[in-house]
Amino acid sequence: MPDSFQNPLDDPATDPFAVAKQAAEQLAEKTGVDRHDIALTLGSGWGRAADLIGETTATVPATEIVGFGAPALAGHVGTLRSVLLPSGKRALVIGARTHYYEGHGVRRVVHSVRTAAAAGATTMVLTNGAGGIKETWKPGTPVLISDHINLTADSPLEGATFIDLTDLYSSRLRELAKSIEPSLDEGVYTQFRGPHYETPAEVQMAKTIGGHIVGMSTALEAIAARQAGMEILGMSLITNLAAGIQKTPLSHQEVIDAGREAEPVISALLAKIVGAL
Ligand code: 8IG
Image (cartoon, rainbow, N blue to C red; front, side, top):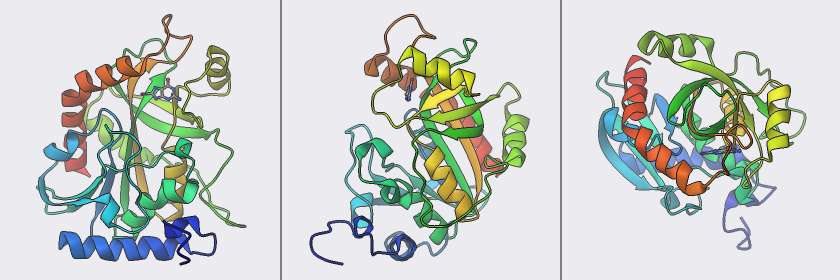
C-alpha cells in the first residue's frame, strides 16, 4: 500500500476482501476467538443490546483493526466486541459503523460486514435509528425491515458483479422475531445519502415508491452481507416521524432523546431475538 493511503481500502488497487480477511485475522488474534457465528451492527438506540446478549469476552478499539477509521460522531462508540452467547455461539458486536455520508466511499461503509463474514459469521443483524413514514408508528417503535430501496445511487459491488436481492431481509428471521414479539410491524427501509434529513416532498416520494422507513445506513451493508452469503435480520428504531409526517421540524436532539428512552426496551427485545438465532 502506498503511504499516501491512510486506509488500504482507499487505494482502488487494493482488494477489499483481502483487507477484510486480514481484519478478521487481527480480530481473532486480539479477541482470542477464532470464529464468530453471528454479527450485529448496533445503530443509534440499540447499543445496550451488546450488554444484554451475553458475556463480553473482549473489546477491541476499531482503530486497531485494518480498514476501520475513527468514529465520526462522539456518540458512536468505535469498538468491536466479542460476546459469548448463552447458547455457546460467538457474536461479534460492531459498534463502529461508517456512514455513507462521511464520504469515505462504499468500501469503508461495508468493511465491517465483510470483516464479520471473513470472521465466519453467517448471520448479520443490522440495526439503525430511522424516521417513520407510517403515522401509526410512535417514536420509540422498533420495526422489522422487510426490504429496502437504495437511493444512494451506489453499490458495494464492483465491476460486473450481479447479485440477487430477493428476500434480502430473511423472511425466516422476520418470522422468528415475530414469534418472540408478535406486535412487531414491518416496513421497507429507504436509504438516503444524508446527512441532511429529507424534505417533506422527498418523504412523500419515498412513500409513493413504497418506502415506510427513511434512514442513512443499512441498505448498502445488506447488499454486501448478501454478497458474502449471510442471512440478514434488519431492524429500525423509529426515533422520529419523517419530515412532513410529523408537524414539527426534526431535531437531532429529539432523535437522540427518543433513542435513549427506547433503548432499554428494544435492546432487551433484540437480546431475546439474538438468543433464538
Ligand atoms: I434517527 O428522518 C433518523 N435517521 N434519512 N431520515 C433519515 N435518517 C434518519 C431519520 C430521518 N431519523
